Image 1 (tube, rainbow, N blue to C red):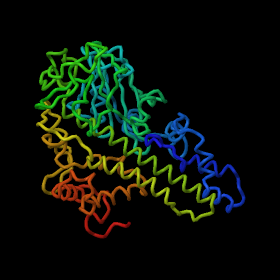
Image 2: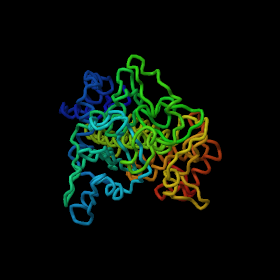
Image 3: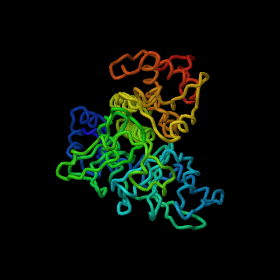
Image 4: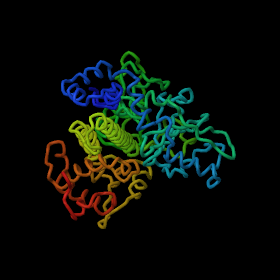
Length: 468
């Protein structure tokens, strides 16, 4: 089965099929399950059919399309509607600055993408790139003379939610929620099959049009730098390492043949286009690397959330159908939850992160501003501290472990995630996937978490042993 699809033969559809058979004899039902007749009945529907992927998060228990969201943009709209907050409008950027301030988004997080990979593509080119800004739970896109500000935010229980805000001055600005168009790309195998975020690297023509026929790269912290930032501007230094940013591919028949040297170690973007309309002069390489880590981290959190809730509902239906105790948890349900938890744990601990071979240095205030956000332990250590010589962060454990989305994971899967984190960080699990973590790394991360994260179980603090 494709891991990006939320459906499998043990999913809610199987359970609902069983219930609709209305069998009165539970013994007969049990025999059908054991001999595989039920699996066969459900497996005849291909999981590749779009209906299954859509139904998984548009039905109970997710209800993505009909749910009332509590993401940062939804909360900002509430403050506007009640008169608690007003958004200032300026002639150069419209509502951009006010939105960034309200959502606590650093201006120095600015990343500039010149490929036509947004719905406002007619206004995007190498001369007029689109600006992207981000915080821990919100993303904001701005285009010169654009009709709207583009936004996405992370709802703790529903993943990425997409909005637009018209660039027209009014007393009560209104964020308009997308009702499905964005999900064509943002709820696919590229986002773990859930409403999510992605950063793509493309071969871009001189006009900014991607050459999709030559392929694209979905990038995160495991991507080689050589595959990153095609269609993006990148400011900063990176030594002998090379990437795809800052340049275009003039030959459509041979797009992979472009001059990487021309785009390397660029510190002044003003030589390439007019940077004056933008909030900063940079498209900081460090901000780009954080953005790439963060987008997929959000997706893995949402994936774990959805898989657990779907598994729990499936278990409830099966228990009723088979007249089992209400709190019975089958081996298949436990395996499904454990599988999703393991994926999240490995990404949280930067398994398979690309090793840096030269020092990375950004030109803007982003590195300092991001690191200051803390929190820090008694020794002044933080999960936001950068390394930038061998890897992205000094202590390779994602800072999004503090996020509302991570804290809001269903208890059943969060317990598994924390237990696995403990096994790795305490040194109990010395398996190969975690070999990138030295003993000092594990001790430091464990110390930081026990002192700064009130959500961790008591056994992180030595008060009792984790349950198996």
